[in-house]
Amino acid sequence: MLQIGIIGLGQSGKTTVFNALCFANAKVGDFSSSKTPNIAVIKVPDKRLDRLAEIFASGKVTYPEIEFIDIAGMSSSRHGISGASSDKFFKEASYVHAIRMAQALLIVVRCFEDDNIPHPLGSVDPARDIIELESELIILDLIQIEKRMEKLKHLLKVRPSSEYKSEMVLMERMKAHLEEEKPLRELEFSKETKNFLAGFGFLSIKKALYLLNLGEKQIAQADQLEKRYFPQISDNMAIASLCGKIEMEIAAFDESERGEFIKELGIDQQASVKVIKKSFELLGLISFLTGNEKEVHAWAIPKGLTALEAAGEVHSDIQRGFIRAEVIDFEQLDAAGDWATAKKQGNVRLEGKDYIVRDGDVILYRFNV
Ligand SMILES: Nc1nc2c(ncn2[C@@H]2O[C@H](COP(=O)(O)OP(=O)(O)OP(=O)(O)O)[C@@H](O)[C@H]2O)c(=O)[nH]1
Ligand SMILES: [Mg+2]
Image: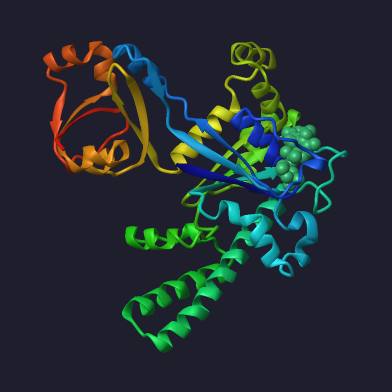
């Protein structure tokens, strides 16, 4: 499953945002700093799927899921910046480990002012915090790379191989980049290298969605604030903003009452829904759909997968016994009203293994095992 780790300085509102996104009610504030992460799974809303359930008269609707992991604040919160390096191992084990394997990070930056909630660095200063958080990720990755290089040096001595040699070159390239205080997500890697690196769980390589946690009075200036703190957006990152406190209140309402409350507040859409959408886009994900009378299902996959690769998401048998895929755009199926009519209209295409799946494809797999 897709996993997104929530990080940020202490008391920046991570757990508040987590509660808002996941409709959860984990404790926030002073007494919340437990070292066990909060974990919750959310469904990615997709209106097309609801319509597909009508078309197939299907009893069950399965949305793609994302898991959010909320960990306690990063080191600056407790030890000050200077203390950050002294307890690397402790911090590594207890905080960061939980998000090592996440595909992306949601980085919460405090913008809200509140004299009752002390900021770990003494004042509310989002620009400084962004730099602080980036360098924290960079330092943690540097430590890990240096450890790996030590090991590689040894391995190259006792068991030299071309694999180790090229890995050393790769690590050196990454180290040089980090030493310029740049996150690894800005580097380009081949697909194979990316897969190889995935196992290391580097942090600054993960796609990052920066989330400005606004005060109630700042909501109207959300766009300006986003532009002010992120005048340019680099690769593999995105920006969003919301008022965690209000969003958490919205999430606490029953679904039936939520719409009314949002209207009263004069907000156009629940901000957390936007954050989920942005996370999805940032991860470069698309959805394809499958359906029959039993179940309709949206599958989240990275862009660029073939019909055969996508089949593996649904079931390994379908991938193994793949014959062909019958494919139609959701819009065309929606207009036709049912599969048989769409077929008669000639809009259902036969595609082979190498067909590149597109967002909104409704796929009926033909297979034989
Ligand atoms: N005024 C205001 N307060 C907020 C907002 N978001 C969070 N807070 C408050 O800030 C405090 C800290 O929020 P948490 O969500 O616990 O912060 P955290 O980042 O999870 O904190 P740690 O887990 O201890 O690092 C709580 O008292 C929240 O109610 C906001 O948008 N506006
Ligand atoms: Mg928390």
